[in-house]
Image (cartoon, rainbow, N blue to C red):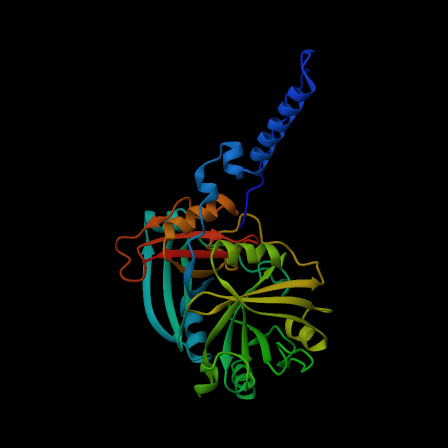
Length: 370
């Protein structure tokens, strides 16, 4: 469980008045005192310090990872890229504004266009802030920087997928498609390639060999099949597992340690050595934690980041009790983006309440309740 460090109160200094007591009496007093001190020290932090009960709320598990999305600069350009190059289909196209969305995002005076795209069973949402505009993705970004996030799009044919991307002049993030070596039992035989979308968001195309990946990736025969997971760079796997696992209820489904020439060229980071942990909710794509054991010079998530910045990604997760999830995270983890959980009476069937929170490294999650 994620815990907020407690502040220790300074002990009051003083001296006992000289008193004559029997040896038995003294022993009794020492025993009772020790028991009382032990009980206090073993009590929950909220009881010892008089903290609000919200600090010890039990977690409200996430029931599904619903979708991933990012902020884009030019919606028409992005929709054309994702639908024509990667075979996504447009599901919806709406424009939003008003107090609820300002409260959700912490961006005053916003007007935004949101487009939902579907590939297979998975959904990607794109948001263009018509006003106010945010910051661009730093051009010197590297795959070990803390703001790195991507979605892994599954292909049935890496050769054909790479040819499609080259024909459409995509910008390389990897040097080329990489086949991970067979000595790695978790990742051996997987083929992967990183590339950029029009706004410099990193995307991955990935092909699983027989015996790896979800069975559905081996049944479908389209070129691009769907989204397997989103991957995020983290500083400390244990801290992130406490957040996503203990606090939000996702389950670890796989671990791997990847290094070598192929991994370095996939990430385009010299000497890349990664600890990879994959978590899943009951349904939806996975969340993959990427901790760089080397090199450890990746930069932290940009200060004062806001959802209208182009480096903003968000993972939408569904909670059985969104209010409890939001309050638990607010009490035990970094400050949320939304000041409070926001009600959307006109949001239709997608969600009734929503709130934006950040994980220990700054990655954004949109918690929704239906």
